[in-house]
Image (tube, rainbow, N blue to C red; front, side, top):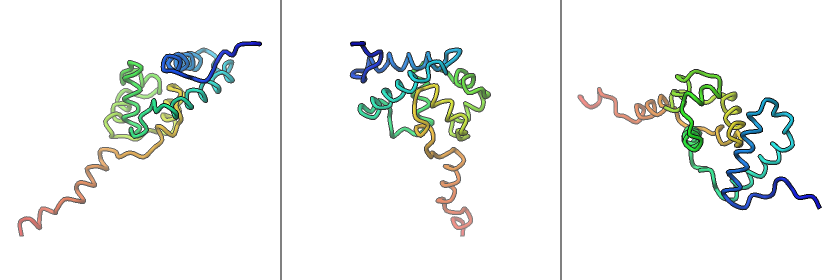
Length: 145
């Protein structure tokens, strides 16, 4: 009987090994040649994530990006290169000043072997926070009357 190359993930070491293999395949010159393996590893990794809560499901997309960057020892310039955008744009995302485009979400999900839904969730941008605070504030004229 032939032994299987990939099996159900049972521990964190195996999980990390599969994640690394998946990243290598995705970053290879011709990832299409690994299509079946990429699909299988993605399913196995997502199943392990769901079962063991390896991802912080409460984290908003920006916090998730920061966690992933930390885990992969990446800086804003590395993410900018990955996404083919300016470092300033990445900085604005990380500081809640700009939202993530569909293209950015797609590239992040592919690179980090995650579902797009992890990055495609609502979160407040800095300007939205300030606008809400201003709406709740008492107008200055009423304080002096």
